[in-house]
Each structure stands twice: as structure tokens, then as C-alpha cells.
Length: 418
Image 1 (cartoon, helix red, strand yellow):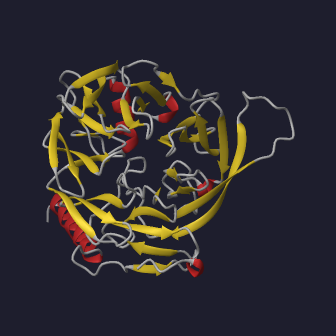
Image 2: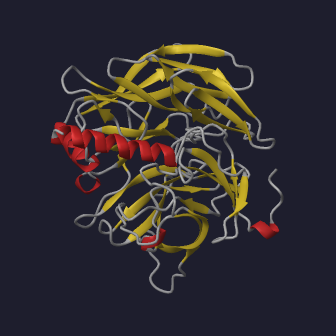
Image 3: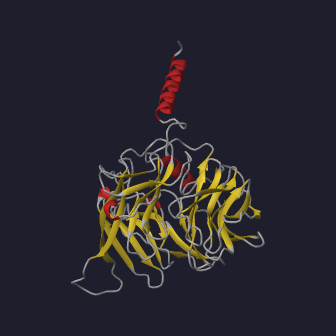
């Protein structure tokens, strides 16, 4: 047999074995169980194989705090957080943007048109068409504006995909190589807003930096955060801008070689920007809180195994969660495959008082879920439920992807979730 066809046959056998190990039509994971390694109760929230919660910094809970928006292979659905009942909201192939913070609407793109649907009534409206080579990523606090980016002109085309990265048709197999090539391309881009009422598109900022990771403040309708994307050790990542294009502001300035920072997100009250900081890359790990009004910074230290791809914070700021990481992530953690709960703790200052100094702190970790069977090519993307009692994440630990929640309280002190 020709060697080429031998390789093809071997690939078919391997893929067939993988499918048989995790059949889409096989039995679903359990509805609920207690993790024997942590003592915390876990609940499977979704029934559809391939269903997923949103990216860690996207608004995924409805304005009334009672429902969670999530994606399925067939569109967008909503889960009642009290009854666990599910209702399909949008059918068909769409790209979700996020849930509104003022109304019960979910925003998404379908066939190049930005749309919104009320999750309670099903009322749907078309807002407007995207500009050529454009995508929309976020909606502001009062749902009057959406924001997105576009690549100008023609040439190499990086089509927008699920955040945080665009996907290119001729994308190299290695993510790091793709990041380097896209960063070096210096494609001219525009950052724009879309008027939700009229559909008007307005460009507010132009750059040859790779603009990405757009996220409106959850409370200030005119404040937008975005990043310069690419290899983190080669750029100043985190920026804010006003929706009229004014007050472009860099949030963090590095002080050492190979210092990296990113995966930024807002506190629910909009007063603080949180982000991952490593000084230098892959060696010393911090979660930083930057206060917008004062510029004050607090650096919370955490151990290598506790570093997480993404973090999130409760509405009252008392608890933080993280989704861990495998050996292939930047922390190279030998035992990092856990969903974590962190309690932030400041270190008492017994020295010089100086408002320009960074406030040091530490994150005290508790393990919530053993993720040893999870494949981290799918990022869990943790978030707290509005009542702060559960941490929601997505996982492929049983094969297909489902959405799960783990209870913050230990199982013996917890109520029955169903």
C-alpha cells in the first residue's frame, strides 16, 4: 500500500476511535455529583452536547439576574437560574455578542447583520449591517451603542471568530506563530460604534495595531476598554477610550523585560479593571486591580499551580474565581487543572506610606473542581452567578462540551440544587 494512503487509513482509524470514546449520542454526564477531591457540589446546567457558556468577560446573565444566556449547536438558548428550565431564543448559525444590562435582550450577528432578541418575549429586531471585514464584540451599559472593529482595504483577511482571537483562513497550525504573523502584519484597522436605535456606524479610532478584546464598562455607557493584541511581551495591551474617540488611555506600563499582562475584565461596578500580570512571563504571577478614579493598583500574588487562564470576581468584590490551566499554558503548572475559588487578602503595610506604591496582596486558594479530565484547548471561562453562590464553567471532561456550575459552599452546608 502506498505510504500516503497508509497514513490516511491510520488517521481514519484514530479519528474513529476518538469518536467511539466520546460519542455525541452516548449517555449524558450526571446531573449532579460531589467532587470527591474538593467536597463541592457540581451541577450540569445544560443538556445539549456542544452547548457552551460565554467567554469569561462577556455579559451572560440577563438584566434581571434571573437567566443565563448560552450557545448551542442550533443557536442561542436561555437557562432559568432558579428552575433550570431552558428555552431556545435564537435559531440558526449566529455569533453571539452578549446579553444586555438594561433590557432582557441578547445581541448577536446573523449573516452580517447585528440583531437583538428579547429572551422573554422573543421579539427580534435588526439593528444594522456590519461594515466590510468588521465584527461587533460588546454592547454598552444602557444598550444605546455596540462596538466593534474592522480591517481596512483588501488583502490578507483575518475573519473575526470567537474572542479573544480572529481566525485566518490560511492560519498557521501553531497559535503562537499565528499571533506573531498577525501582529507583524500591521493591518490598518478601525474601531467603531453602532447606534442601536438607528444602526449608524461611526469610526472612533484608527490604528495599525491589532485591535481586539473590546469590552464596554458595565456602568458607564461612554467608556470602552480594548486591547492591542499579539504576543503579550511585545506590546502595551490594555487601553480605554471614550465613545467619541477622546481620552485614549494606556492602563499599564511595563517595568521589566518579558513582563506580560492581559485577559483584562471589568469589576461589576465598573470602578476597577482587573488583569493577569506576570513579572516576568511564566515566572511570577499576579492578579492586578486597577482603580479608574484614583489610579491605585493592588497586586495579588498567587502560586504557579493557581494561575488561571481567566479570572472573574463577585459583584461585591469579596471572592475571585479562576479556571486553572494545563502544562501547556504559560505557567507550565504541574498541578493546575482545577477550578479555583480565591479570597483576596491585603498584606499589612508596616513601612513607608506612599500613594504611588502598589498595594501588595495574596490570593488564598480553595479548589472547587478537579479538571484533570478536561482538555484545556477548550477554555473553561469561569463566572459567578449573580447571587454569588455558584461558579459557572464549560467543560469537555465527559467528551462533548456542556455547561456546569459548582457551588461555592461545601456540599454538607449547601442546599439541594434540584
